[in-house]
Amino acid sequence: MKKVVRNKIRYISILIMLFWAFGAGAQNQPPVVQKTPPTTRILFIFDASQSMLGRWQSDTKFNIAKRIMSEMLDSIANLKNAEFALRVYGHQFQYPPQVCSDTKLEVPFAPGNVGKIKSRLRTINARGTTPLAFSLEQSAKDFPPCANCRNIVVLITDGMEECSGDPCAVSKMLQKNGIILKPFIIGIGQDFNLAFNCIGTYFDASSEKDLKKALNVVISQALNSTTMQVNLLDESGRPTETDAGMTFTDLYSGKIKYNYIHTMNNRGLPDTLVVDPLVTYRVDIHTLPPVVIDTLRITPGKHTVVATDAPQGYLQLKMAGVSNASKGLQSIVRKSKTMQTLNVQNFGETEKYITGKYDLEVLSLPRISLNDIDIRQSHTTTIEIPEPGIAVFRKSFNGYGTLLLNDKNKLTRIYELNETLTLETLYLQPGSYRIVFRPKNSRSTLYTVEQSFIIESGKTTDIQLYK
Image (cartoon, rainbow, N blue to C red; front, side, top):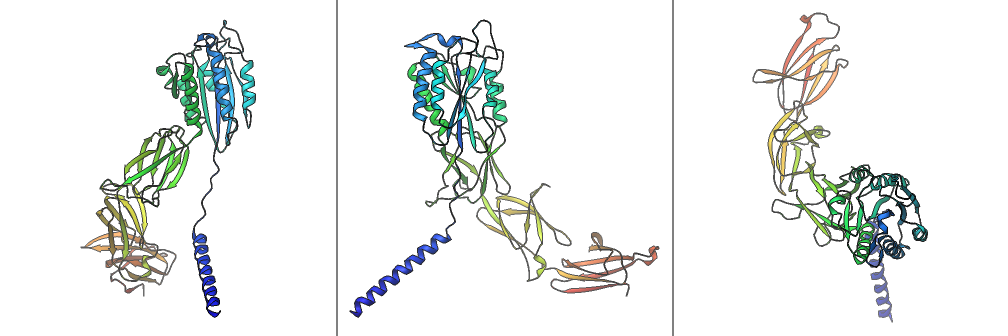
């Protein structure tokens, strides 16, 4: 009986240990950031010009396009995080005469409005001209302000611009201003690729079957994100570099789309990212110095791997001894033979840099210049400077003092004493110095005094001015 009780106690103890172990592990794990998915808003711009009444396979192009679009709308009617709208052109005025303002938003964006779009399509008749550029330009007003939306235009047409507009220029303007993403164009009946490719992504529909397929592909690409990974390559061409910040920016609008910290997954490979395939990106890798991928295009529905050279090593800055002087001490880091500041690194810290040669300017007194410091792949380069000494300036009067470094009988100014203080303490690098001082109220240079002194590491030197 006692043995059974002991076994139960042991069993319960094990359960408690497991509970605390897994509980603590769960508590130490940071929460996953749940981002609200954007709402995808698709504006269909539908051609109702007179040319759409032409015969095409089983019916007129207009009737076939309306039927296939209605069937497609049924398949997306209940999608979450998606809204749709309908703009039509060429349907309000009979041609001739040509009315180049003949375009109208027939059904605005709203949740669950697919039925309204289908109903309006049934009552529209084709009769007018083709103001493509003007319709695209007016579509900018169709998208209400939204902080988390993707705005997409799907243009379905069988003809070219007929009103002297430039749909390519309008499309580029809308993309640059961040109003829409790159549009989709479906050309009915003949190949308009040369004319429409500059507007956006073009699909040729030379048959009813092609039109149905093109619409399904367009909707799939418009609604679905695509996976990708960024390989940061070391000097051996292997994707081993990681933990760098990455910013994905829309190349056309200049708007920032994503910010990530590069990560290796559980298999030791660059982690998979989910991105919008309709955007052309500029990717800034926030290494020191930065690495830039100028143009990144994603193939919708296909996992994209992009690689860039980012070999890195480490730079450690330290000071000899145990002095508090290293607190707050920094060094300017520049690419070798350049004057642009790349980084300001604190002493006592280690930072990663792209491999290569760098120049350092240590902001000590006096400043220390170190050139052609070599940063190598996965190697830590350590820079150590001497521990400074302490100079205590005791002034009987407020006054003006210039501290000079004496280097082989060449005097170089490194500091001006504070004219309002009678006691001033400075950390100085070991070396030979001279102080030149004149009391503030003295009106003659004859009252100027000078004093030479030596600073040694870790030692304090008192300099008495006007004893």
